[in-house]
Image (cartoon, rainbow, N blue to C red; front, side, top):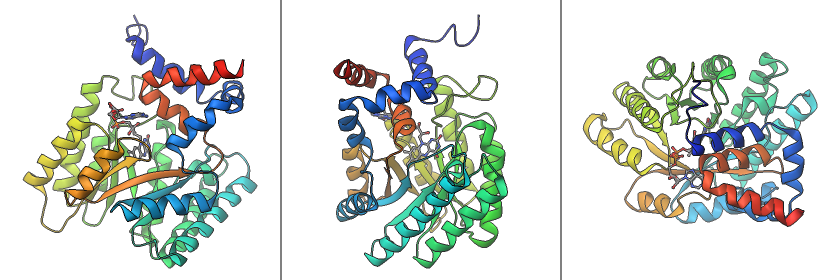
Length: 317
Ligand code: FDA
């Protein structure tokens, strides 16, 4: 029997939602549903730079730090990639002008700046964003997408770090390869966001069971800490947050630093609890009108959220 055939209903639902995240017809249905708007508001700051800036200001006033993501991925024309670069450069200038870059950086998906079209063009576009970010006194983290892009994305991070060593990388604990990738990136000053991984991956490449992913996460974190890098623990999982605190207490070199990261709209009380306890907490805040794939991944992480999707669809019919 295949791994999928043996999977629990929750796992099947997750696969279905991730499958739907890549289907244009389902996208048209969901994005046209009136209730989708209120669902989107829970996870997305709004469509415009103004919305991103006002959410940034509000989170900052609560003692949180921020990474802003302009929504849009899997771009297949150079014009759309150019637009993404322009939005990011305008955004970092605006953040700087408003005095927010002490607490806010940006996250960039290489597929939004043309990775599927031309890898060198995407690296050049990302470098332009890194240069604008540095001029605005802030940094860029390069998001990680599905396993078909891992090698190209890590290659791009190495290329970007040659001129912009402050560039953050992202590694996904669900992939079998990630311990080796952590070893390669673990060195002083290396900013590495460690997350579970949000994409549908084949069983030959990835751990499928929750506990396997958690164990991998902690093995990877241990490598990042002992390698003196700057780990960015991106999870809402209470078990991992507790275990990470223990690992930092036991293994961190003084001054190496670390931070916790969570998504906008998910466990906001926990974000504040950690920040009030003296931890650096960064909230990943997406904005823009291309929210469909992002929203579907958030729904897939919590299949009970499917009720919200079904309600959205019923309202339309
Ligand atoms: P898990 O999914 O087990 O959630 C733990 C608990 O958190 C749940 O029980 C629930 O209480 C709450 N929760 C989590 N997700 C929720 C949701 N959608 N709705 C409501 N409650 C929810 N992935 C990737 O592949 N590439 C990337 O670049 C990034 N970047 C990134 C940045 C940041 C800051 C974060 C926090 C996450 C990412 N991710 C990511 C996503 C990540 O890989 C993963 O899919 C999600 O964080 C969910 O996994 P958790 O570790 O939170 O655990």
